[in-house]
Image (cartoon, rainbow, N blue to C red; front, side, top):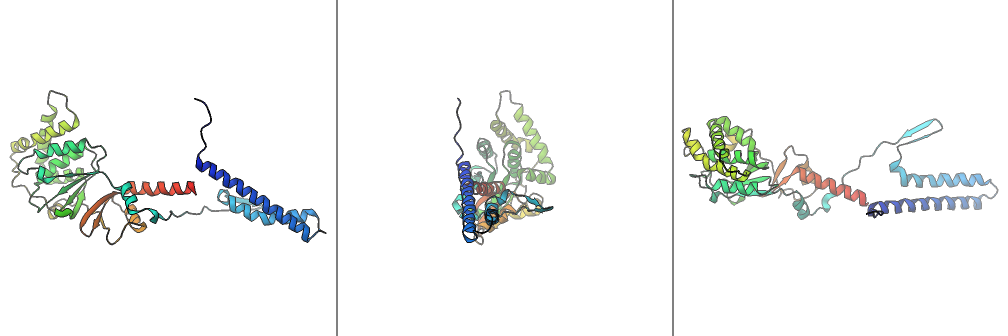
Length: 319
C-alpha cells in the first residue's frame, strides 16, 4: 500500500515553532530597519540594515542557539559548551502512577500449603511460578521462625534458580513485617557451603525426574524433583527434622553473603524525587519500600529508571 504516512504531531509542532520564529525574526528586522530610516533619514540605508541585523541577531540566536556549537569570524572562534539539562520535576508522578510502573511482579509462597514434614506443597507452588511469566519476586512468610526447614528452603531456592526467572526471595514475618531478601542462586550457594550433601541430594532427585519416559515440560519436571526430594535426602542419611529452622537471625548469621536488607522506610520519605533518587542510585537492583516495618511493595530499579527516562524524553519531545 502506497501513500505518505501521517506526520508525527511532535514534528509538526516543531516545524510550526520554527516557522513562527522565522516570522518573528523577520518582523524584528523590518521594524528596526524602518525605525532607523525614520530616525536617521540622512544616513545611508546600509546603516539601517546594519542596525536591523545587530538588533535581530540575538533573537535569532535565542531561537536556534541550542543547535549552534560555535561562532567563527574575524579570526576568532567561540565554542559553546553543551549545557547539562536537569531532569523534569518528577513530583508530577503521582504515587499511584509510579507504583503502577515500577511495581515488580511477584508471587507469594503460601506457607499453609507447604507441610514442613512433606514436600507436596512445593511442586504446586513452583508450577504456579513457572507458568507465570515475568514473575521476579517470591515472598516467603517465616512465621515464628520454626516453620521453614533450611533443607526445604534449599529445595525451593534451587528450583527457583533453575526453572524460573525469579530474581529475589523476599522474607517477611507475620503481618507482612519485612525481614530481608536474597537471590535464589545465592541462597543455593550459601546453603550448599554449609550442607554440601544437599547438592548431591538435589542432583539425585533431578536425575530421577528427567529419567521419566514420557515428555515433561518445565513445570512438571520441577514438580517431579520436589516429589523425589524426600527419598533423595533420606538416602544420604540427612535428618531434615533436626536441620536448622529458618529465621531472620539464622539467615543473617549463616548466609551473610546472600542476605540483603535493601529497604527504605517510605513513611519517612513519601513518593517523590528524593525517594526515587535514593532507589535509582542504590547499588541494589530491588528495593523494599516499608511502612515502618511492614512491606508495602518491592521496586525494581530498572523499571524506575526506565520510567523516569521515558517521562523525561516524552516531555522534551512534547515541549
